[in-house]
Length: 440
Ligand SMILES: NC(=O)C1=CN([C@@H]2O[C@H](COP(=O)(O)OP(=O)(O)OC[C@H]3O[C@@H](n4cnc5c(N)ncnc54)[C@H](O)[C@@H]3O)[C@@H](O)[C@H]2O)C=CC1
Ligand SMILES: O=C(O)[C@H]1O[C@H](OP(=O)(O)OP(=O)(O)OC[C@H]2O[C@@H](n3ccc(=O)[nH]c3=O)[C@H](O)[C@@H]2O)[C@H](O)[C@@H](O)[C@@H]1O
Image 1: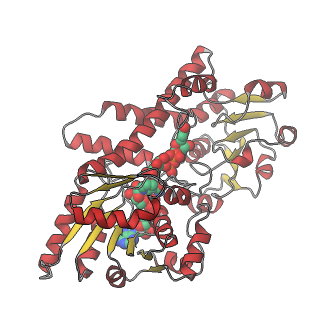
Image 2: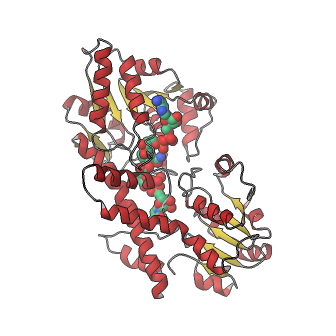
Image 3: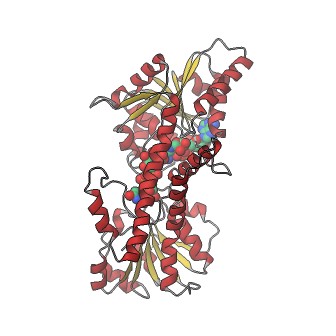
C-alpha cells in the first residue's frame, strides 16, 4: 500500500520505517528540512534501538522516502497518517495546531478520495474537528466531490523499544464506523496481525479515549506506588518487598509498579493534564487524575529533598555526580525528565552537577547550553571525580553493577542517592556507603 506519514518524530518515523519494512511504500513528510536531509544520509534524528539500520535499509531499498514537499507527499499516499506532536497548551489541554495544519495540507493537496489516519494522541472529538476542517477546505477549493474518512488509530509504543513495539504490537486499535476504512486499515496492518487477532475495531470517540485511558492508567499505577513508597519510608517498610508482594497477584501484575523519581517523558505528564482539562471542559472534576499529577510533581522533588536533608540544606558550593539524564533508559529524550527538575533545584541551591548519560549528552548540551553549573562528562567514572555524592536518576543497564570501591575512591564522601532502587541497602551499608533510595 502507498502510505504517507506526516511528522518525522518518535511515532511517525518509527511507524513509517516499520510499515516500509513489511513492504509498504512509505513517504514521510516533515516541516523540518534538516531532519529530512539527515535521514537521506542514513542518520536518524532520534536515538531508538534498531531504528537507524531499519531506516537506512528501507531507504536504500526505495520503500521509505523523506520529503518536505507536502503536495508530493499527499499525492503519494492511499492513506495519510497524522503523527505530529500534540503538546500541552497553556492550560494543559492538548494543542491541536499541528494536527489541524496537517489536515489543512491534506485538504489543499488531495486529488482523490483519501483515508486520513490519526496516530497523534488527541482529545475525544478531534477526528470530527479534522473532518470539518478538511471538508471546509475542499468546499473552498470547489472539490466537495472528493470523499474522505478520518480514522483514529492511537499509538502505544514506548520510547526505548519503539521499533520492537511497532513490529509486535500488543493491540491495534482502529476507530471508525466506516466498513471501507476498516478494511483498508486492516489490510495495512495485516502483516502485524498474523500470530493472533490484535485488531480491535471501535467507534472513533472510544478509540480516542482509549489512548488517554491507557496512559492515565499507567501513570496512576506509578503514582500509586510512589505514594506507597512514601508511606513505606515513614512506616519502616521496604517498597521493593511490597512491590513483589503485590505483583505476584495476577490481578495486579509486576509491570509498571516500580516506585522511583517520578514519571517523565513526552506523554504521561502531558496526557494526564490533557485528560484533566478535557474533563473540566465537560464539567467533570477528574479528582483521581489530579491526585496522580500532584503525587508525581512531589515525587520529582523527592531526591532533592533527601539530598538537601542529608547536607542540612547546605548545598552551595557542593558538586554532585549525576548518572542518567534521559527520562528512562534506552532513549536520548529528556522531555519532562526527573533529572531536569533535580538539576535545576540543585543549581538553584548553588550546587554544581557533573553528569553522564549513555545517549542523552547531546540533548543535555542543547537544552542547557548556557548552564555553567553543568559539566557533561564522557564516562560515568569521570562524573564521580571530587563529587560530594552520586545521584542516579535513570536505570541504564550500565549503572546496575558499578565498581563500588572505585566510586568510593573518587568521591569526597561515599554517599549515593538512588532514584531507581538499583542496589540492596544492606549491601551498601556493608560496603560503608551511605545509601538513600526510594521507599526503603
Ligand atoms: N513519543 C512517544 O513515545 C509517543 C507519542 N505519541 C503521540 O504521537 C504524537 C507525536 O509524538 P512524537 O512522535 O513523540 O512527536 P515528535 O515531536 O517527536 O515529532 C513530531 C514531528 O512532527 C513534525 N511536524 C510538526 N508539524 C508538522 C506538519 N504540519 N507537517 C509535517 N510535520 C510536522 C515536527 O517537526 C516533528 O518532527 C503525539 O501526539 C504524542 O502524544 C503516542 C505514542 C507514543
Ligand atoms: O503515549 C506515549 O507516548 C507512550 O507513553 C508511555 O511510554 P514512554 O513515555 O515512552 O515510557 P514508559 O516506559 O511508559 O515510562 C514513562 C515514565 O514512567 C516511569 N516509570 C515507568 C514504569 C514504572 O514502573 N515506574 C516508573 O516510574 C519511567 O521511568 C518513565 O519516566 C507508554 O508506556 C506507552 O504505551 C505510550 O505509547
